[in-house]
Length: 305
Image (cartoon, rainbow, N blue to C red):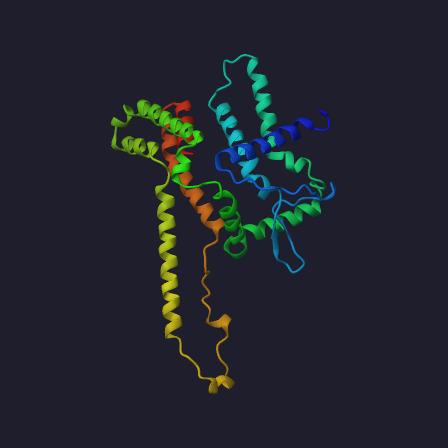
């Protein structure tokens, strides 16, 4: 069983079953799932397949298990790296080795189990098809495939503010944020009195990294509204040709259409938001690390995220 990687499969299966059980207890709405399955040699794509007419048909391993295991696996991997960087394994005994091995096994299972047991996963021709589908999924039509999937799956479990604050997970996260905030405030409240620059770093350290991304989103929204207004005025002021002059030829739809993009690609906006977020919390983290507070800088990174 070890040679066939059965523990990896069972850990992944337990995670999926636990997710659906907790989701049913919190939100309800369980439905019947058909038990019919295809052949065991059928390969499941990563994001979707491209049809005969060139259209993208979404559906794949990432869309199936992103909310179930991938996000939690990535978070667990990030926390493990953060603990190692912060020196959490220094001056510890051999009893920590078993915990690290278990965490590594869980992380590998949550992130890689669907790909390990997917038939023909490592065939190069299949990789090329997955890359094409990935490009179409995130870039085609301004990322509308991505937006539809996110709206239908990621936003579905939330049932309003009242249902969110009553969850025990929300209370635990709130307690964690308050604890991190109080710890950082206690350590940096004194040194911020050294200069005005350090005071600015202090306020930036304790504030959420939302100001630069918010300004970017507001600017994009204003540019989009201004572009739509200009397009409407241009269409109203355009000359109208009578049917009697149709023989002379009328402007084609491609010629009268604006050459500016109708919508900004979501991938580009997401990348810019991520870069602005990193740039906003990088300066105070570097400031805390320059003081020699290694663990405090790791705590500040968790608070920012």
